[in-house]
Length: 332
Image 1 (cartoon, rainbow, N blue to C red):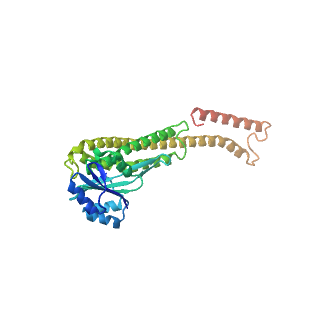
Image 2 (tube, rainbow, N blue to C red):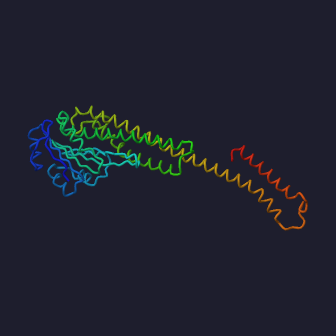
Image 3 (tube, rainbow, N blue to C red):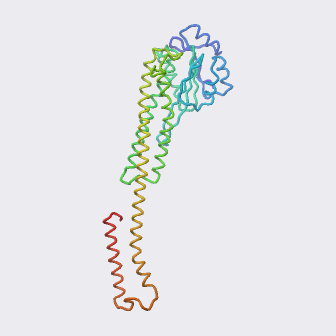
């Protein structure tokens, strides 16, 4: 579905022809204009017209229709294709949800395709329309603004995840010795959310480095002004901070899970020692009662007047001795 379509001339939104081909021709004729079309989860039939008018590469179109892509940057003859994965984090459910934003950038046009609900495109377009100096940079300004918004939200999500991880860590190392029986499940669920977050942030490092002109692949990128590199370097710095935070979260949650499992193992060992100690203490009266419960005529002290009190005293003495021994060794 087409969400919005407009021509931007000298940083300002203008009305243009409804036909894509006429609008694109008009934008190219002036030289200071570009066409921006926004689509939300388009069907193949809806996208056919856009593909034909803008000459988009079929492989990129297939990726845009099917979604579920990794962040990437691909350059074709007549356009550049960029995939971003915005994310949101719901603290109540401890769930990271990712969407997808695809951008086709070419000569005087931008086509954005959104999948999922957690996409900032609507707000970005409104904000950009209040910043004509950014829109004057054309498609490059749109690409940077969307990328910067996605990466900045990564920082917010990383902060929220770090706060929740601190709470989880406090629960594991609380005086209750390792939290509740559901703690391991919570830790594992949290680790899966960190992994989902990592799938969105880590693959984006290579495309951003390329846009920023960094590394071996930092040459000129078609349809992107070289003067925009400092802006993309700033976004790349923010992404680096995010990826460092993600790596730290992943390591820490693994350490917390290991610590929790170790605590559970220690607790089980303590429980087994306590059970064994009480079983040993119960074995003495059971053994004595079993021996003297046998109906033999000739047994030592069977007819002695003080036999019963002597047996009771012996049992009590042995039980007290075992209890003090186990207590001293920390078994009880």
